[in-house]
Image 1 (cartoon, rainbow, N blue to C red):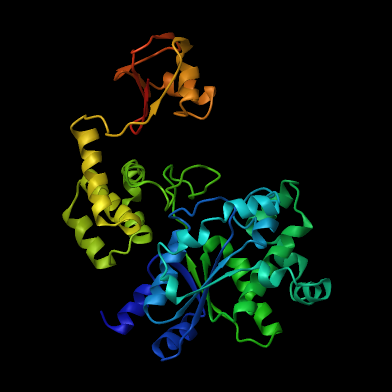
Image 2: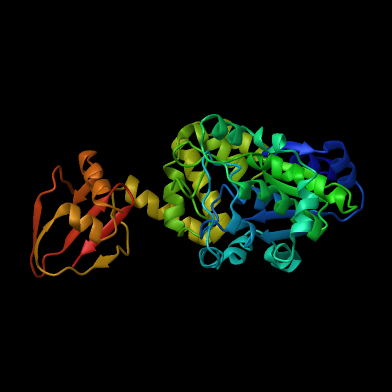
Length: 392
């Protein structure tokens, strides 16, 4: 692939918009080494593959010889960005953020080349800003510009609360670009206002405005935007078998999107494969293998594929089923499902029972009947297709 073709794929694959497209293409064709910035707030403990879309894009810039600048927003994470929310995002405590971000760099380095990455916490510079500095940046934007953002406008129209601290977030993300002297910033389409704010604020500090590459948002397993708060995610820390199984549960119509946004297989290879392989199950097997191998390596991806086929095609039980000890006695099935953590609540347990999603000793149960557990009387509980626990 020529340099021009690599640049074309870099700026089009999974990309919604580029600002300034002409300027960035010229810079990429030159011998200049660009500083490419991506920031992620630790609002949850895990990075999911939807967030990883921008991380893989950052890796692509890195592979072309540019400097990857990765920022964990330990300060902005406490303030909270509501760009993608239809309600106010509660401010997190310092302790919550610390707990969430424990493994963020380790997760990011599953994708990025650690030795060639500049890594920062943005509290390093944001904690030092005073009111005068914030006022200078705030004077660059009108209240109307903030309130006209789509989700903010909807909330105002619905008389939902919009707090003053939400107006501060774009200033802080923009100042991140000043602090690291970014030439390019990456972010999802929901970050448009914040990304553009960076360009404006850089000019205040006599820096050339950064170019912007906005990546598309990846749908979750249920078809909505992938979000940790909705639980429709595939985390890059998921165990290989769990990751493989989640991809296999994907809606068929999302297969091409996941190949484009969640894998690093070339677009031409993807098109050829999808055209040649018409069966969605076979397409998903390859997709699941590819995604699992990206985060866990080919050997574990091969094993996850073999385990999945054995379990679901040959109807074999998975190996190494978790075992839980329970005292002999009489138990409601709902209580057992919650105790063994196969479900999160009694409500979920009852819902799964009503839907026929629960099996006891490989037989479907249709009611919350009492179960007598005696010594040496093992019990196999199953919820859905992938969750198993053996009660000893």
